[in-house]
Image (cartoon, rainbow, N blue to C red; front, side, top):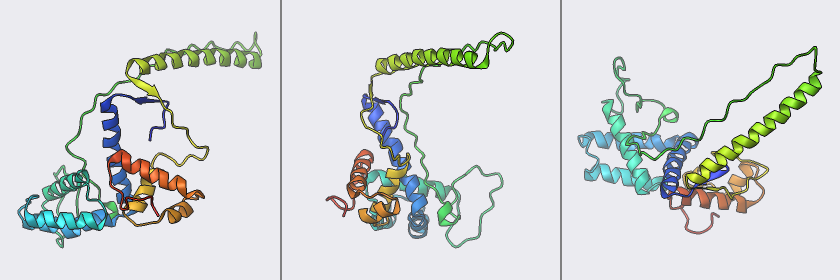
Amino acid sequence: MNDGEWVFNAEYGREAEQHWGRQIFLYVVSRVEPAVLGTLRDEVHGVYLETSRDLDHPDTAGAMRAWAARWNLSEPWVLEYARQTLEAWGMTRWKPGEPHPPRRGMRIGNWPDRPAKELRWEFGHRVAFPRVEPPQPPPVRVIPWEPTLVRWTDYAAAQREQFDLWLTRYRAIVDRWAAENDMAPTTRKRSRRDDGPLAHYEWLARWQVQGWTQQAIGKHYGRREEKTVADAIRRTSELIGLARRSLTTPE
């Protein structure tokens, strides 16, 4: 799932990739199927309020499990994000069926009274991962062009040659930094037909939540090889730790 040239070998690197991958997936889910958060609000949020905002109350927990099963999102980490979202919504003190509450003077940004397509997950409880900043590039020296002494074509050729040397030096600096920080070169080849950074998350969302077949996904996104879609769904679900709605290859 890494589009760069280096990837962390360290365990925290894999954990970070999974952590952010989960949030990306849920974000995509909310975009392609707004009813996921819409039903969390309509079918669970009210129960949560009726039980005095008790997430562990049997009624709240039961409503949460039913909601998760409906969308094939029963993994514990999904339920944790759903709990965080309910807690954020509960801070607004808005109840289903009531008019919009006044927002003046309040710093709460995640309101449950919006249309379903505008609802968003609450990714509170931040997880801290070590962050290693890449080295800064060395300064680039550009010699002014003296048009009375040098033709533009000669000047431009000389500057390009110097810039190529600069790129080579900078690449060596970054490669050395990556090796010193326990990284390894990326081995996954990028297809000539790049799907974009969120494409595979979207395919998984279509498959898992909306029940699309791999044939439908391939046709919708212009992919002729169904195996490409199936492999992407499998890899993405394994990355984020999501049990696919079928334990067999997507059909």
